[in-house]
Image (cartoon, rainbow, N blue to C red; front, side, top):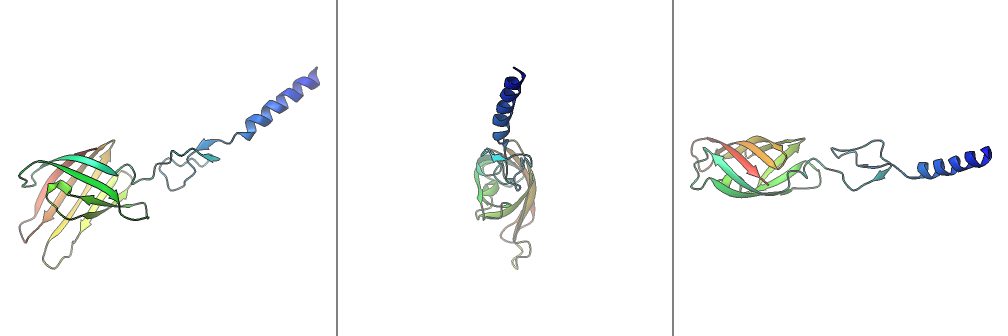
Length: 151
């Protein structure tokens, strides 16, 4: 009887040990689990939370309309660069930005010969991005404004 009990426990234990622990196995992901043995497909790479379409509002940007649509998309394969389209409804060209954790940094044409530039920093919390944007376009004065974008 004891032998059957021990044999049964060994069979159960061997089945339990054959099931690999699921989790994120991509070391570049924010939710990487070093103890995971099988990828569960739920890895979150840092720039993915920024990607998508946003409706934004601004304060102090000298805009005709204070509401705008912005899209953030992948820039390349390095997992930290993004392209921002129509930022603040002011900048008509695509801007390159860099992601680090929950932060975004825009540093575009800082040393342009015509004096034009766009730069700023921001943070994402859930589906909301807040950015302080500084820009000078067309030789004008530097404008500083606050942007809030909701996915």
